[in-house]
Image (tube, rainbow, N blue to C red):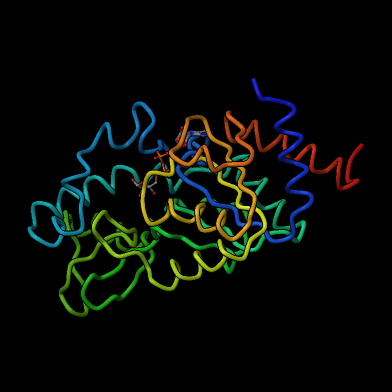
Length: 262
Ligand code: APR
């Protein structure tokens, strides 16, 4: 059951804010049918993340086969998923003119699919919707490479230009995050007046340092999440609950405060 007082407080802070950073994790997409990583039954209870590191991928064909099998197994659910009410709430915050940046750890492309402006989106961990060559950095739409793999019965695709190994354009453990995306994200976290976290366990670095950066710069923090996080003591308003229900309720209150509904 959502806490009505906290919903009202969160809506009030959103209404008062002018430079909001929204920060999302896998928990915003579970109600769109995409499992998260650390909830019971999540991805890391099904796969051994130690076998899926960047170093292992680069070390041997057998790990490249393992990684592609893992990624190909998860891709259709992301490709076919639809955004949910929580993604829509983020679009509504942007349309109200209050969104400074949307920083996501997610690779599913649902924020883009929902209509969030691409220039406002910072994908810290990349995207499954593209494939890149780890040598020459060439990129392809995922669909094109999947079709090539099916046509040529490939377990691991290699670059047509340089022969390097191809990998989906996500950031694996041990792989460097895109430098400019990370720097811009830290700058936005330091410039926002509200840092709104939706659906993240806040355990993976450096992403999980962003709320700290925002707090240090004087921003207020709101967390919408089902479970506890290591940063709960820093958070001003914690709304425990499902992202769709919580964000629907918050945005209903927000519209009342904005005079957009009775
Ligand atoms: N509503 C609200 N919260 C939810 C919902 C939901 N419907 N479903 C799950 N959650 C919460 C979980 O309780 C959990 O705290 O979302 C959080 C998801 O945490 P993780 O599974 O750890 O996902 P995330 O925080 O995005 O992980 C960060 O870890 O493995 C890497 O690269 C991967 O980007 C990922 C990163």
